[in-house]
Image 1 (cartoon, rainbow, N blue to C red):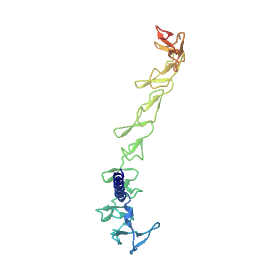
Image 2: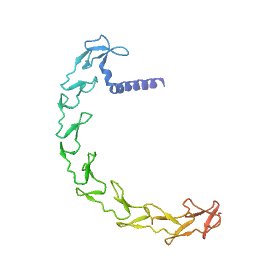
Image 3: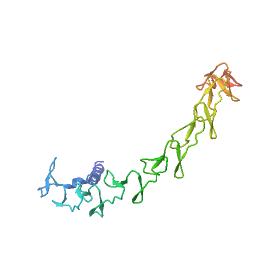
Image 4: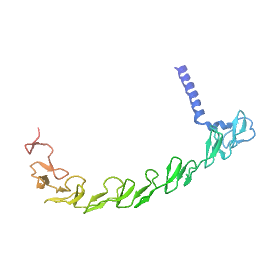
Length: 260
């Protein structure tokens, strides 16, 4: 058992070493033995590390070929340098200015651009946003870049007045219905009709139904609220408009009888 176990441990250790060599590439900047030029002692532990702008090769620290408008990163992988803000890498050899079109500005990241307010991007240009009457600019960079004033809705590139019927109000919703009926009214087609509340009922502003609900102890029957005839050994449920048999009883012909 000892020999296979030792072999497994050795294999695992070798694999861990390979993984570590990829997971920690910066360590390749470190060296041991005599310190060469353009190097300095490590801030912790033994050995040395190449100065910024240099990369270790064999036992020496050789200068990186850093192009104009770039700075050294100190990393041992890749080019070892990155372009300054406002520049982009080209073929891993140079840093060219990022072309910023008219009416645009460089993003805070420094690696892309964005159109100024009042303009929107089309391909690699910023074109003016055509603002219709009764509209204002938004910060949404997708879509039209504008929205209609309150009381107007976008139709074929224009802002048209919203026809609000009597006893209704504007919802100010970006999507869905532009208006809703006031309390006590229900939407019928494009109008708001008064809700006729029967006796023993109250207004219910649910988006469905007749606009009213029966009070507790009453149920809907033919458009009216009638008293619930609660049988013996029964109780009103949570809604107050239906009933169930008590525990230990079951429903039979409208009555609650002992269960079997």
